[in-house]
Image (cartoon, rainbow, N blue to C red; front, side, top):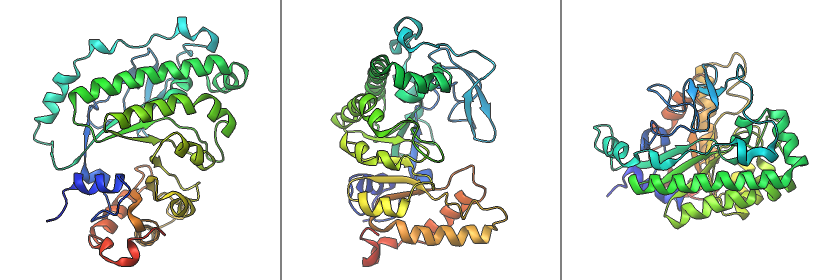
Length: 334
């Protein structure tokens, strides 16, 4: 009997070879989207937030180019001195929100499918929350000049996330949480590996361990070139990473870490983003990449919505590869 999409995805998340390559877009129930306001509240068509104010009082403005909101630059930062965070930052009172009522509506909606993986996306991890409250320059300077205050703030954010996970888990049957905390730029990490270990390893490790204790897989969505951080991410117990963008050496990463990590994304290579590339070429390049890096089941290929034609190319390739793992050579990591 064939696995359900949920069973198939959980098999891959547990680092075993699934029956089929996981298509998270089609195989997942996206839950709790409209009750969370870690960014501006979501609206239909804008699941990652729109215009407005988040739980912390930060103003956001939707950007069409990225399909997501950014901190609105027309408002001044809420904080310019990290040492004052305990008096300046107002954490939300999560007891005010009726998660169970929202869950009852979602789980009884005709669009909910109990055979699909249940995923919740939580925005603004510890470092992203700092970047939303301060200017980028002040936030990065704070990491170096006031590390103790930054560490205390990051751990307080972790406390907030852990409480949020508890309240969500009481209401929803969660399999996977996608926690966003971007640590990379196009060329490097925002901070040194040593600074990351000093300031973020403890709070992120606590969140990940808490999720595991509740039987929930925690995936960290960290864009940019974060490849140098992978050994430290694994050391704190992280087993799932997205969005695994093309500035990282994805084939090498999958080969080296695919027995203990899963990788989400991995499709936005420079070749498919090249100027003048045709849809036919995108389809070919995507199919070739899937054949190369999805061996062993560690990669969940996703087409970045900001790359025209890529999502359609991934869907087309996966539809033609339902029998991918029946071939012995595709059941082992590349």
